[in-house]
Image (cartoon, rainbow, N blue to C red; front, side, top):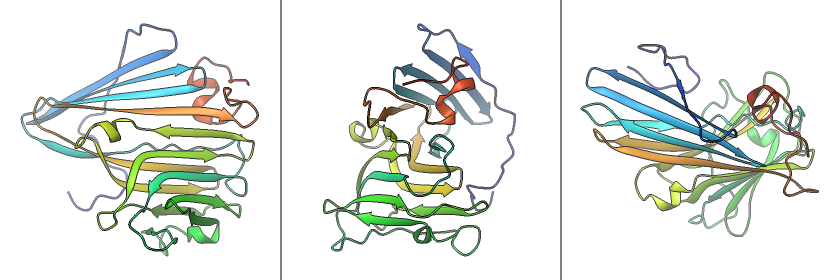
Length: 255
């Protein structure tokens, strides 16, 4: 009960458990978790697959309960380029067009400003192109202890987005992500917010999806991520902790 706070810990009714399902290939893994509490229940299946420099994360959510439920979903991307602190050399291009604006000044909110977060404009240039797309170019290293958060999409602003973004790092490696279902499924899921979080060790674009399911209803969404280098568009270099060493086969990816 009470007001939802994204950065506050919440207790579980029961600690979630995940079962690893048999995979048809060495380069993918499928996990499933389900829970029923009273009249509410869910089943969440995730399949993570790596094909060269392309990773896909497919999620399938089913309502196992007797009542409809609604829940937000987003991914903490927590990108960092070769352990370089977030600062000059990092750029984030959002697949977000504030096409209804009459000016070339992007609109966004900073809900934590003055309490737990600092002004993003002190550390980055936030600009809008002629097509009303938005870019964030870091101009100053984010110090330890400083956190930044900007919200670029809300119910009062007319926008166009497929939830995509391209993140450029100082070492010339970039990550492009899209969620195709946002363009092919008209109502579920849909994107209701587009946030960006940053601190010294990470730059995290966060397209926010809203999922609402009737009993026995299922919805799916897929994150497609492509990692590339300017000097080698089909390679992936060393880039992210989430894509390296312990996460997959116990060895780094090499270009």
